[in-house]
Length: 125
Image (cartoon, rainbow, N blue to C red; front, side, top):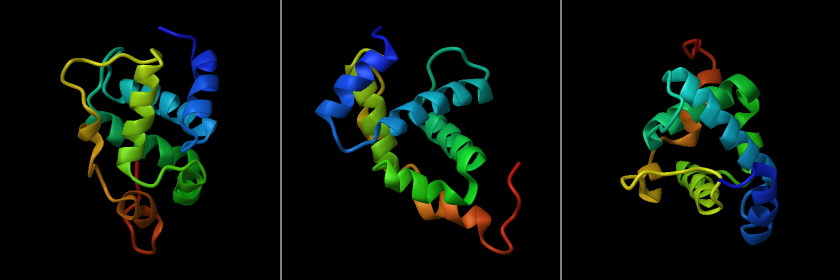
């Protein structure tokens, strides 16, 4: 496994679609997700997407969509691209069943990140 900061330098140079903060966020969201599911190892793409949503809402609240957009993240597939960039950089590991496609269509960003803050929305835990 490669050091995160070393890998990040080459990642943002090679793939300029995502801001370096996006990679830090996904790494932190992975740690958060592992805590949610009481795992110290592998989580599925769906578990990670749910953990990312939870972590993002807790960190950025109603500003989540704006922050993610600033980083180049506009759909769940972008999270998958970041994860697989980190896998290719040998920062993260995958199982033989993990695929980029597992992140396709995870959830609608407006539903996930804006709707919880609209008037009349049910409060999140």
